[in-house]
Image (tube, rainbow, N blue to C red; front, side, top):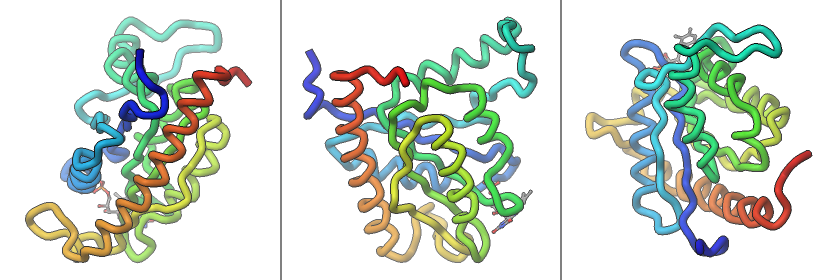
Length: 199
Ligand SMILES: Cc1cc2nc3c(=O)[nH]c(=O)nc-3n(C[C@H](O)[C@H](O)[C@H](O)COP(=O)(O)O)c2cc1C
């Protein structure tokens, strides 16, 4: 039987953008690499290009089409199994991309009582406006957002050809965010096991 206090957390790392030529996978691989070096969590990389979700919702009370169900089956169980999430998001028009909102909207209880950390990137704002918008949406989905974020402003000048940021301070920021994610992930998993979240 798994020990709720010591077994590793499953962290789903979600690449929020689906644009051709996107930067998202570079940032996602970098943070997944940080997770891989830790003993307290493992990463499951969810790429909304490799596993796209439907964009047409069924009428209220209707089941999704067979095709939509097949797409959902590639993503939804992985979100359900996750103990924690890291959302990797750019900033699109002062918010987060539609592909990410679609992934959030297709799910509900998969987010409940689980922590969400952020890695954001963009121009001067470093994607922070996208993160602040995500916090509001995730509160509606009963998720808990992590205080510390990792954000890259003008990311093209920060990341080298090796796919890593040149400033070692970024590694410290990643550790701080993941330490907080781990604390919340362990604590909320323990709480869900003792008191299932059905609110
Ligand atoms: C539709 C669109 C809107 C954008 N709006 C903003 C913005 O409001 N603020 C910003 O800092 N960057 C903005 N950008 C620049 C993106 O942050 C940058 O291009 C980033 O690489 C996009 O992420 P991606 O490469 O993963 O698609 C925008 C880019 C796109 C495609």
